[in-house]
Length: 429
Image 1 (cartoon, rainbow, N blue to C red):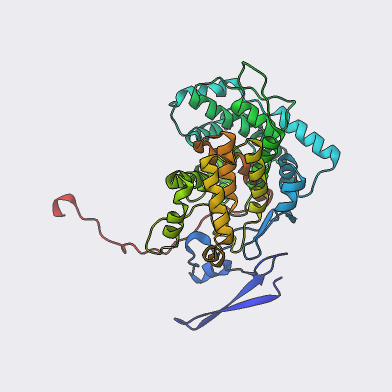
Image 2: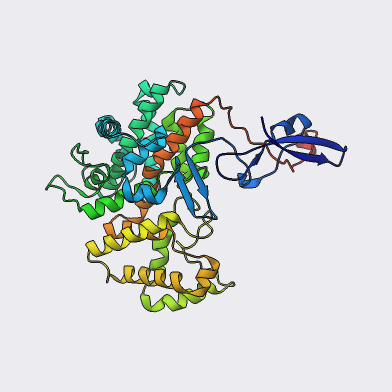
């Protein structure tokens, strides 16, 4: 029972409607507008920026405070003290695991990292220069053709098995899309490696020699996975929920999320950072481009600075900045021209009054793009790694929704087209 009420007065017929107001554990109250349809009214909210389409216990964001919580835990604490698979367990189950629970979870994920050998033949159907995200959309959706034993979305055990499979197989399929593009043989996953080590092994290893993986690089990769694991009701997560509301199988739902993430306005931000650095070209031109960024009449924009959601600072960027500097030092790339340029931009953005006033701080995409480039991952793979990381968030939200008695999603519209017309025969048009 809602303690607060909102009054809506409709001037055309002098009708007053009483709408319940509900409060969550954190964040703004919400007005329940479901009764409007009985009065032949809808709300109008393009982009759903003022609409709570669901109830969730998974992730909370406060953009004004620069706060990101997974099941109540600050992202900074998780990124520094946890690892990706522990965060996966938290997102899926609601609590941090005990030592025994984590060991079992890690072992189960590890046992699912291989893909059906027939799936490897799918890659031969793509051109060698196909974008890795195009490949991922296809092969992830195709998983439903192989794993018929986990497609009953109303069975909690089926949903659990599907979650394990997706989290485990995404790094394998992502690395395969890269290996295919460069003509190298696929590398099988190894059960003796951690999640991030295994991904780096499958990305850069060859059958010719033992894969050598730097602990610093592996930790940086793991933090990238953690920092992108979930971000509340964004476009791709909302897409997964909407697809899932129809009863679609989990593999199809995640493929829909991947397709949405592929859009440059959503998942391509760290790739755009590298494109920007390439355009600037040299540290000697930083002043010129800073001036362009400050010029309201110039279309140039600094990519990787500021954030649509976080108004003061991106809590993920603090962790990623430290990791970025560690990686550049580990690889002796601090004097590389491209990275010197990036670090100069970072310094200016953190000290220049214009950027401070506008709150154009370096965000997580700025640092993750630099790290991925330094590791040797091509920009075409950046969004794939984002999809790999976000899979657990998508699955957690999908599972939460399927565990509730949710209705199929059916947004309404403000129709502005033609009114009813009579069909005109061809000879009279």
